Amino acid sequence: MHSDYLAHDAIGLAELVRTRQASARELLDVAISRTEAVNPAINAIVLKDYDAARQRASRNDANRANGATSPDNTSAQSALAGVPFLIKDLGAPVAGLRMAMGSRHYRHFIPEQDAPVVTLAKAAGLNIFAKTSTSELGQMPYTEPELFGACRNPWNLDHTPGGSSGGAGAAVAAGIVPLAHASDGGGSIRIPASCCGLFGLKPSRGRVPRATPAGAGELGIDHALSRSARDSALLLDLLAGNADRPLGAPGTFLGASREPCKPLNIAYVTEAMLAPTLSADSRAALEDAAQLASSLGHNIEPVSLGIDFASVRHAFLTLWSVTAEDLVLNAERISGHKPQRAEFEISTWAMAHVGRKLGERGLPGALEEQRRITERLTDLLHRYDAVLCATLAAPPIKIGEMQPTPAERIQMRAVTAMPLEALLKRLLNEASNKAFAWAGCTELFNLSGQPAMSVPLYWNARGLPVGVQFAARAGGEATLLRLAAQLEAARPWFDKRPPLMKARS
Image (tube, one colour):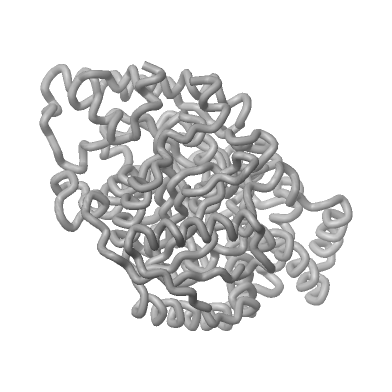
């Protein structure tokens, strides 16, 4: 069953259950076995709920045996029934399960209600059996929370799987599940997709219901990381209101992924955006994707975005810091107890103080800049069907490479103890320089709210994946999914497996 399990995406596994070639319990047992085999190496799973999942799987099988679920039911609602599933340990509460969010402060917090995305996943029959690691409160584009330790990339254990949905990316790349919940407030679906050789689609703002507001600027949204584009399409149907429609019907996202992709006019952007420059690997991945798309009949036109990226950067950081302030300094409204300095990583604590001192005052200007950015990109995507650009400025960085140095930690402690405006601005500038130098290509589409995807088409000479990013106009997920399916057929990636996955399959 192990080899069969790895040979299928989530839709394929659900088909085995639907046609009674495998049981939900058998699939779960394989997922748990793979977790126990590979998680000691990648540290992607931070909470296990095996017993409850086994009970759900057994009920699913009993219902099928009793005829409660027809084997020829082809609605989207039942299309993933019996498939093991993982939830990111951030922003998507599961009733009765701890949601630590990578933070010592929240490590005992147990939500009482499911998030909408969790409710919808359960209704679809997805079997949640564990939760995946994230950077503390999703603050960083890598996943190295002090509470749980570093999460590692199955392609090379010395490198990051990205963040903040790094646990989801590592788990899918390692073959624990073919599809896992993720969320994206600044690139947290697309960054792990690029690092882990996966498909990652950030939907349009508002497409998927959320448990709580997405924070200042409404940057964040829930969806998934997957090994196939069609899995992502079907899950989006389930999360976005198409669950009761026939599987793959016209007008659904799965249906779109099955349709031919017409020739598109694609704006080809080689600017590094918030990063200072693109590495040779990222440029090579972009050039390769442009050539592939051109060979498939698309019109590729080099374009400059004409955006003041310094203003974009300032706006994004302002919105980000206000959200950090809310989750850290106002944590009591969620956890029920007052936040203490020792309960948070120093960089998270510092960002929260930036939000309190600078962010709130700068919020109106940041929102106005967000409006201008959205207007500019909306205008561009009236003239083009899609934008092609880098997902990351470089391949996956090494574990620890972006962690604050001892000197930076001392500076952060001093500044938060005495939060002078000039010192906070300097701290914010230095910290953001380090983060954006690698992960500065995704934030633009969180600000604009437009859908964007990272597609795994390129691996460098060291065997590390380097994704490329496509974005479309607001509400244009169907365009992206048609294109993704075409790219996947032309350059299949499903069977590209990291060394860890091969060694322990």
